Image (tube, rainbow, N blue to C red; front, side):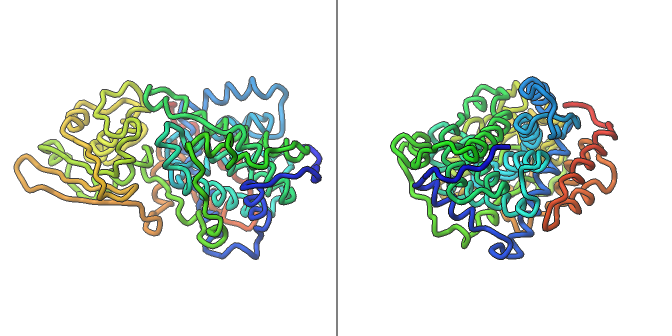
Length: 456
């Protein structure tokens, strides 16, 4: 890894973020926040385990082997192969994004990008173990600040939040983990901002491009921190300047609320997904599940009306009734998610891959999604009219306090027939002052060795 150079100046928003990140330490992190950090480690890597059967991880592994060249010290979690830090971060980020069940902070998926970056730095010896938890926290705080100010605006203009803001967040985390001084943390943030970006056209076209954006974001973050450590001169206004990331993505420069940093912790707003579908379909699944109707009743539904926030309704694929040419279209469709919940109990990798059975597709045709200004973001209202009974009503929204992370991950791990006790061993490795990332590798090896899953 490069020698740190500290005599190059950088300013602006990047510098302010760098100052905040550099100020983090064990004494500045409340116990409840430390517990939330452990949850984020566990969700990212637990979902990664449950994604071992996805084909995208295999594609990324092949690409990474060509990107890497010589063998390295870092592990591809999907295979155990040793490879360079950048290539491993790429492949592992794609893996952790593979089920579409990663965490979400606003519209940005932080964990699936930053965890592979920190894992690569740890395995290459560039990160200080005692700084890993605070580094992960730094990513959520930086990414959360940017998403809160800019995410909905940039998404409305066709951008995708994860490749916009997660590389910046992961660069901040990497710089902290490497113990770079505040000025170099700011430079890493600015350098990542200069290369960040990615659109959402693949959701319209039903292609897989978006699945690899997490991997490219992880690579960008590592490149940015290495450039910063080497003394690269970064644009002081890479975020807020006239030609900076924020204006390019948003058309204007919304002012992030820097006063929230270290006070209103963004990591407490992180939502974990119960279902392997789009974040904006989670509440619809939750509402459908709360109706507790039998499959027989579901077959006799006359109509279902779903009311969503207009912004979310307008995103690519959200109201689509199909037909679905691939998993990407099914993942984004609220009608598919609701029908899968009522017919099969939940959307899962099986019905998503197949595009649903005839029974599920028949129900989808009875579902209408409507925009409603009265519905808060990430919430939904649902009216289900049965053919021979009353109209049932349900509403749902995110509630991190009531989410059962362990149960959600245990359900996901059934898709790879993980050995008994897998989640407990993973949790034990991560819920520590210094996460035992070597133990994490052993858990992945154990699940791979069981090899009782088939690729989707």
